[in-house]
Length: 291
Image (cartoon, helix red, strand yellow):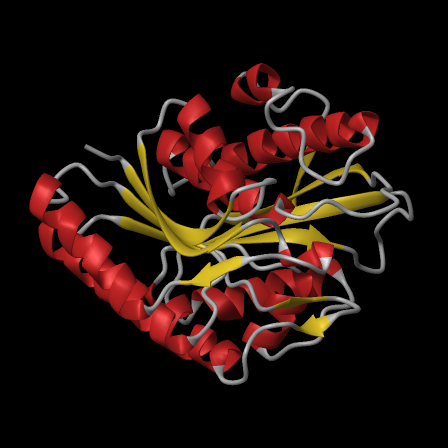
């Protein structure tokens, strides 16, 4: 039986969606059931790909089969990423309701994949509004990037105080923990990038060297959300638990990015550094308490 259900995209080649999230979770000791929203040959960023998008009915059918087999009794968390459209999203929230009917304390970690700085939105029309109004209020943990946080909170983010205020505004809609997965503000060093976590107990920021790629790898956000969820399950959502999860996540991302750059490819070097990721601690990551 599974500890975590992950509903995301799937590629046969490469590491995005479930391929970037499930293996790291398993290496950290979590039993994961993966439900795929698509099956593509490779990430769409390559320009050419083959495969199919699965319907909302297909996802519900798979959830039905898992529930009949396991009863959901041991599931502690649901993790979701790219959803494609609102019908897929509705199937995801239906699955969440069924999980919480069995275990009300089941955590929902929502990576609200919608767009990015410099690129804007890359999802179908209407999905950002659905994410803001339906998915985010249902989640315990949300992991937006800076662009997504600013849009979801309806606030411009220029300073670190802006980021903290935007995260707090998002928490007012339901989530207990907000992780900002990439943050560059007015006091950021030019050669570093930060992540920030905000809870009712406090806000913390970590900063790591910015690693340049000729072609940035895809899947980093999926990996980050998975690592952070694992940390929240290990350390809890209260007190400094999310801060500890943040530090471990930042250390793991740094390890993975360094290995990926050294490998010279555009896919995350997950297999090569799996042992280092599994053993990642906050060594070399300075954590700063903001409030």
